[in-house]
Length: 147
Image 1: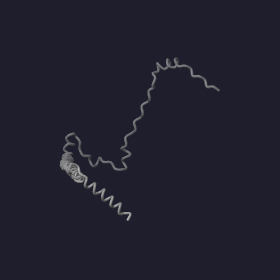
Image 2: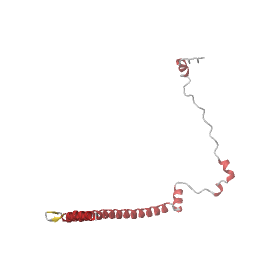
Image 3: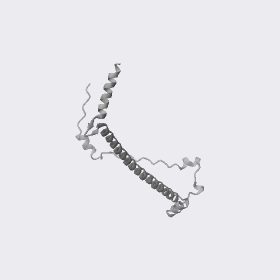
Image 4: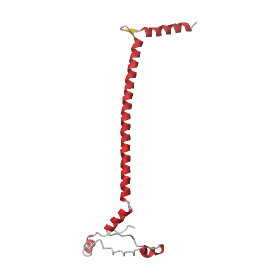
């Protein structure tokens, strides 16, 4: 029987909370309307964010399609520029020609084709000979090492 007064007190407190009125409207109804209004605003904000993301996704998909078309055009341009007949005509215009088969070297001849080393030029002195004696006379004598 010790639990009965607790439930009675809780029931009466809970009943008072539900029966509490502000200007003729129960407090719990005010809270319910406020919660519904908050939910409506949050759903509207979520729909607006989803619409923004949807338009961004559509824009990115459009960019991807455009870039794919550019890639196809660039690949076609590369294929056109790399045509052997076109390259051969351009090389002939500037005086180039294919290498004759008889002028090609074999593996054993590669050492013979190596260019001769260029002899190194003699190094020039950093100080001119006429200025060297003056520089030596102006220099202070080096101190002798202490023993």
